[in-house]
Amino acid sequence: MNNRFLTGEELPFCKGCGHTGIAEHTEKALLNLGWSPLDVILVSDIGCHGIVDKFFTSHTVHGLHGRSIALASGITAGLNDQSKKVIVFLGDGGATIGMQHLIDAAHNNFNMTLVIHNNFLYGMTGGQPSELTPMGFKTPTLPSGASSEGYDICDLAMAAGANYVARIMGIGDFSEALATAFSKNGLSVVEVLEVCPSYGMKANPGMKLRQVAEEAAIEVKVYADRNHKSWEPPFLTAPDSLFSSFDCLPAMFTSSIEKPVRIMLAGSAGEGVQVAADFFAQAAVTAGLNVTKKGSYPVTVGVGYSASELIVSPDPIFYTGSPTPDALIILSNDGLSFARNTASRMENGEIFIDASLPVMNAAVSVIPIDFRNQAGPRNAAFYALFRYLTHSGIFPAEAMKKMIGESKLGAKINMEKLFQLP
Ligand SMILES: Cc1ncc(C[n+]2csc(CCOP(=O)(O)OP(=O)(O)O)c2C)c(N)n1
Ligand code: SF4
Image (cartoon, rainbow, N blue to C red; front, side, top):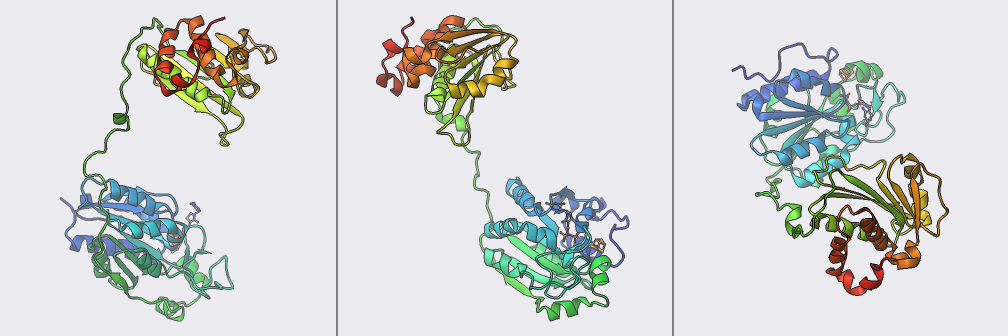
């Protein structure tokens, strides 16, 4: 099998671009380490350096700008086989835009290598400065030169906990330095200083890479080489299912509905709408039905409307939306404002509205009921669902009564009064 890491096609970079050297020396380093392309996952960022991924024969994933490290961290964390090697290619732009991801990867000491292609500017978008542009370095969009020192990203990676951190010159054969980084345990970071001839050279005629680094006191050295504990998968066995802590509800009642029934309950925050809908949903389960329940409320959960969309069905429910319910139950002014559009879309079904609210025009029958007066504002939602069950017969109202009666809530409310029909 051909174990080459590059396809052999001409690399796409401008003549003299430092990215070419990084790609070629990465291949050389990986070959020298005896790895196969199937062992390597290359995650690239957005930028000129990133377009190299289609020239690599290993697994490749193209990330969003600045997010390649986050993506690679996830890949590393999820790998079944921790002996696979994750390598991230990113530019100085991506490294600083995604700085938090870099710090987190170092902090967690994920088993992967970051190769930061530092050409001191954003190449792909025309040469804007990045946070690694050295003081005085000119770019096409900053012809007067950067007015402050760039970050020392190696210092930051080291302080955050990366096991191995080095800055190297992207000149000559630097494959050995890359191989050293690739073979380290935990997070290794190599910042490769290099040149973008198209924008860096153009804006700084006659620039010499070593001189730029020297003048900006950017040291080429190994910052950290240690063997702190690297990241380990937190779960060696699959965690328990979230459902395992729930008791199954036994089917005690029956229902004869043959198709899904959609119910929307719309009232006010703090008036038990969600709790009542929960009891309704549980009761439906005890009648052998499949149920979904969705709650809607503003981000300020203590004020305004509170609505619940319920679907009960003899068959599994694959779509939980109910743009037009079969029954719309409106309990308060807040609920009315929320449900007005839904009501206007209904062509079938029924609307039950609290008798205190204005009668609304709708294409379906609108039935006023004294929910609030009969049960009080706090219990109107329970009462309304109970009334709806006795009216529709979709499953026995007794199921809901039993569910509430056996709960802590049942001890607090006057069940006889609540479930008394007029
Ligand atoms: C979130 C986001 N911001 C901005 C861009 C536009 N953009 C594309 S490439 C690029 C610069 C890339 O520079 P660098 O990361 O240094 O890589 P180079 O091109 O130099 O290899 C920018 C800003 C983008 N694609 N996504
Ligand atoms: S624009 Fe600069 S960084 Fe991009 S390929 Fe050309 S030389 Fe390389």
